[in-house]
Each structure stands twice: as structure tokens, then as C-alpha cells.
Length: 277
Image (cartoon, rainbow, N blue to C red):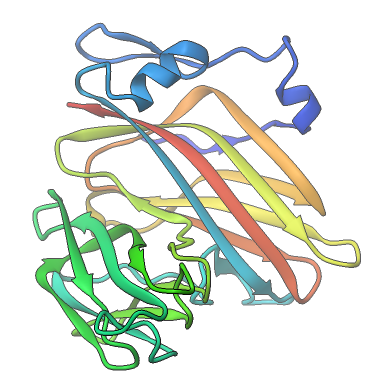
């Protein structure tokens, strides 16, 4: 049974000190993988077969206080709803300058995710401004999306919104940012994910305490359960998991946040070492 982890936070200064050690991962093939220093660089460079480094980050610009105010750390607000089925996606901008037929804003967008079998897929689409551009592939999950070519503005002029056939909001990209800020992740089929670090940043003029929960469900159908819980005040906090949190294939991971104060901006980033089964 999966265990719930309560993290210990270190300040940025402490996290960079010599007292912090890198977690170790030994996979079922007896491969020893450290998640820091030169080994981490080797993983990121693709020099270790069957091992991949995944860096995810999300941002919610406005989390309010009070009962029922828990929100996922992503740009769409509320609790992120993972789609129930693989469907084609439609992407539209709030500005007509994001159009592949012009030389203004964003021209093309790359989308990476999973198909109905949780296998990794990707596609590049040409944007059509405020009109919807659709994918050829059916996506069950989206890991990331980002602008690949742009005109004179060098970015997306308007906010981009992606929906599926069932009208779920799958992702958003704020104007001029060019990439998704999704604090969610799904482990591909045939892989095991090891979460090694997490950073929480809280921004607000006045004091606030934010609780961030790592919620996960195995197989994409089981109930979400708590896998880690952390508290952070205004500023940046870092959690280093000496024993990485393990997620099996097809597990949905969601970062949810609750604040003691209204109008709180929360950002979360986390590192995952992804190994072939």
C-alpha cells in the first residue's frame, strides 16, 4: 500500500549546503541512480538508458481562503479534472494575433501527453487565433504544451485555452508566457515515477500559510488519496525526499493547495525520475 509522506522543508540556503544529501534510487534491474550532481545531469542528457528526468511546475495566481477553497496549482482555477476518455483537443486564443497565417503572436503549439493506453504521444498544431485549432490525435492526458514558433511578439499575445470534446478545460497558457503551468502529472504506461524534490513558492502582500497536498490515484480510476502534505508561509520552501515517493504506471498526480488568506498566489515545482519497468 502506498504511504503518505510528510515532508521536511529546508530554506534555499540550507538546501544548497553540504549537509544535504541526494536521494538514491535502485531500480528492479539493480541500476543505481542518484538524483543529484553529475548523475542527474547524465539522466537529463539521456545518457542512462531507461531513465528520464521530468521537471514539472504549476502556478495558481489566486487561491482564496475558507471552506471548500482548495484548488489545484494550475492556471484554470478550482480542482483539476482529469479527462475520463481520450479525445481530440481544441485550442483557441483570446487574441487573433495568435494565428499561424499571420506574423503577430504565437503561430504553432507543441502538445505532449498520453493516449488512451497511457502511451506517450505528441503533436504540433497551427493556431487560428480566436477560432479553435484541433489535434489529430486523441489525448487522454496532457503533460505539457508550449509555443514552438511565433511572430513579432515572440510569444502568445493572448491567453490560450485547450478543451476536449467533453468540454473539459485541459490546460491554459497565460498571455506572453508560452508554456503551460500545470501542477499535475500522469505516469506513462510501462514506467515508474520517483518524486525526489518539491519547491513551493507563496506570494502575497500580507502573511499567509499554504497547505499543499500531493494527491494521487492509481490506474486513473481509483479514488485520490493523500501521498504527501506540506505547509509553507510566504516565500519559498523546498522539500527533499531522502526516500523518494513512488508512483506506479498510470497514476494521476495532482498538487492541491489551501490558503489561510484570500488572493494568494501559489507556485509548485517538482522533480521526477522516470524509470522503465
